[in-house]
Length: 251
Length: 221
Image 1 (cartoon, chains in turn cyan, blue):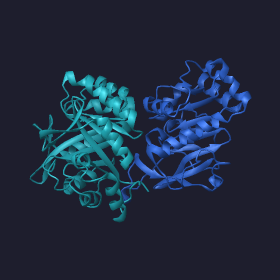
Image 2 (cartoon, rainbow over the protein chains, first blue to last red):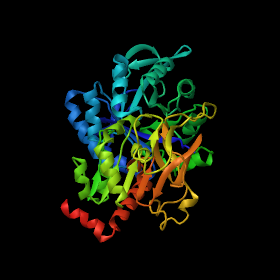
Image 3 (cartoon, rainbow over the protein chains, first blue to last red):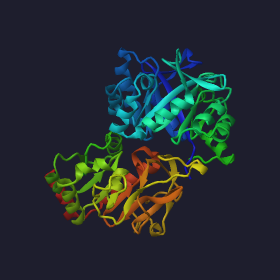
Image 4 (cartoon, one colour):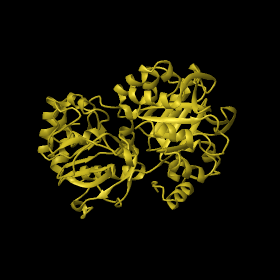
């Protein structure tokens, strides 16, 4: 049986892992390669590197970070943040990324999804959606959550799938960094609307939140950052807990 | 020296990284004529079966000839599918055809939320032909029945006599094949942590145990 994936995300700025609360207040949380190696030992299923500054100067540092992480783990590695063009994606892949995650650029230029899916296969293209609740819907934001994209998350996820995305990484901006649990309602809304895997993100505070998002939230995978970095939730403990709750996981 | 075939289907970074970390001697041959100087062949690949069209002709002929002469061949993901006769994904493109059967599209199951592509970690179920693991089945040596490995694909090969481990995702398909000197895995061993590295190590062990006559082919490299 296909297992539910536990994914560790490292928000990286200038070669260091940082973590904010609701996209603000960044703090240092360690060296990416060291953290990734620790997660590998603990049984993480995948690792995501998000370049949260994505300035021109940081691109070279990012390639070094991807390479350093890729040398330490034999797991799927996704890179996102500031991938605006086919060249940006190629640089990430050449440095060792297995998948790239598109966000603002995919909304601005949806053709990029198709271009990258043709070049690397859909399995290598993740469309990341940052969204908050608004009325009955889920409003999509871009530019690291600073600009309203005037799109609904469910509708945009469907379009991304049709254009060739292989997975959706769905982040609840309302829950990000709050440790109050994933937005299961939003995750289920998107997860049942598309036929590609949905990775839930934003809000993980404890093991029970993962259980919820895999059941009520219909998520295929769940991503967290700060709780893994700090060690407040250990990946190995989390997976054993999920196994006891009858959630299929790789141990 | 192992030949890693680069035919433009996906990037080889992670396969190369895994081979390097396992201490394998490998190189990417520039032309099919060079294959005769290698002792074993790895065909990796990610993506659409149509990408294997780049192998039709001289590469396919040369790889076929080397395999018939007894050289070990290891197909990974798309490279494993290519070992079969062909695929529903690109019916006009012939596979290598060293294993009987054709690759078909996985159907998934919306009611059970079994999505396609099949992405993630799933379990290997050893097949009866793998019972003598370590002797008859070399590629699974040291692995436990039920080990999890990382898949990402929409098409899969049928369970035939060559199947030594199967995986189920709405339907059951060949996850690992082994027949004589031909080996293949539908998943990505280079991204499957310890279990994946063990399988790659097993293939390297097959190559290492080749008779001296076969290994002497390396002299030219």
